[in-house]
Length: 363
Ligand code: SF4
Image (tube, rainbow, N blue to C red; front, side, top):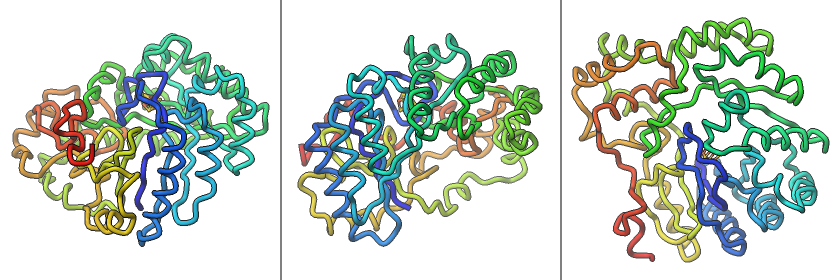
């Protein structure tokens, strides 16, 4: 699987759990956005694997989103992966929000999602935007009123046990078609540590077991998943012989690229760019497809770190023992990245604020 993340507009929030460096961002020009969709389609014609692209970070805030969605729906070789996630801030302040939603629906995209971090005050604190909670709820009601499907993602944090009734009331009000329960992952982004004070513990997740059942979820599975991605379990695995290099060797099967508002194409997911491949406006589709095929997969591990900088297992164990053992993350690799961050391990991620690390040869 190959996914291109086309960054057409920045976010109105600066979420503490964000692992893609979301936040305010220069908007992509509307003509450029349509051109980039066409160029990605041309590149995908030379790619053997399933190729997708997404529109991020807050496409519904783009003034020309109707035109961009129309282009996304019309591709031949690449599939537009419509995740539909939004804070609602971008669309709910628009005078033409009905027309924007109609355009999505007419293009066959009728499912949308919002993320909830708790009651209003906690939610707004985590996404660092006052009014964000109100906007998300308003968006949920807006799309339900128009017959679209609503998914609510609940990002479990340590305050959930005391806020579960408040969250249930939100769900009763919205009556979503689907509820997803997740634990934020950790990746070594510049804001990666900001969410740490909110992380749930294994005990918090266990306490929520009965409540998960009321949401129709498999509580045992969720609790087991949390235990599997706790710091304590990672320590045990490393003590029992888990080798860091083996983790890096495991096949990943996924390749991520990002296209920035200036049309520069990077290897790496948004916020984890490791190499600039050039300007999508001018790249030869066949040549860039050949280059992408050669590049290693980059979902995890190598996506962030060179193997040469990995610490000895003993140091990694010591670093993880220095962290709260019951803290849980979204997956096991997150715990490894958390340990590497505690050791100040250098990442491969380009610092795009430094001119020489951008894409000097293509401007
Ligand atoms: S989590 Fe999503 S909405 Fe929040 S800052 Fe990141 S990209 Fe933007």
